[in-house]
Amino acid sequence: MGLFFSCTQKEDPSDSNFPIPDLSTLTFAIDKGSILYHQEEIRYKGVNAMQTFGLNDPRLMNDWQVKIVREFIGNLREQPIAGNPIQGSDGVWYHPLQTIVDQNRAHGIVTILCPFGWVDEAGNQELITGMNPAQQNFYPAYKQKMKEIAKHFKEQPDVWIQVWNEPYHWDNQNGYTHDRWLNDMVDMVDNLRSIASFYNIILVPGNEQGQSEEVILSKGNQLLEGRFNILFDIHAYEKWLLNSSKESIVARLNAVKSKNFAFVIGEIGVQNVGDPMPVSHFLEAAEHTDVSVLGWLWNQNEPYKNALLTKDGVEHATPENNYWGKVFKAFLSN
Image (cartoon, rainbow, N blue to C red; front, side, top):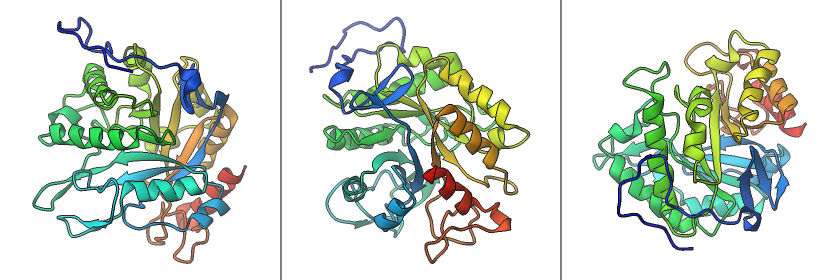
């Protein structure tokens, strides 16, 4: 399909000029609040991983019944898309995205590609969490690299792309408004859709560093107007796990579902900025409401409480991390 271009300024900046394909022809589609695979509703359970730094053993992911992986991209500017591994200006070696996707695909795993950081030419990394996207000086170059990724993967529907990880201040400060979110998300979604025939699912985060659904409820319909295959991403840390019950979480999740917004819990872990937190009540609520969930983090790093694995590749489960590896493995297998 070609693109529709207008020579006049749009009255509403949230309006899209891109044609919507017949969703029934797509391998993966978002329709009326559901994720569809070949027109059948599907729910996913999986993990976040850092395979740009080194490929994991996919047999272990199979043992855990991982069906979807959200891949950390910490150096978007230099991240190789295909070809061979490269050494970035920060001295780190990076595996190509296509290599990661190929390994995931060979084991029936859907891949979400998500930028987490930008490295400048001097090798200095900035993690993009908490930032106002369009206000960053690297934003034009960021969008260009995202278009290159979209162009490469446009005929690989099991590759989904997230526009940004955890934007905006955790407490809606630093100039945040829902209108800023809408303008930024429209710009980043349309940047990807400007690639002809890029029909892949696009993930869009909430506000408050991804932990809030408020902006989705407030502005989600405006973002969806004239757009397709948008999957919202909410992260479950303090604002969900503390001072909450299974019943209160169920009510929040159902409030989003009742508006026909398709969404996933793109991250949940036992620790963020404070002490380890309870997670079982949230996982029970997600099970009750059939919400897709991805755990943080598929990593063999025992000092890190969120690591799901020990150095030996078994569940990282101790009293100090609320038995996180064991709890989430059980959730995956349910």
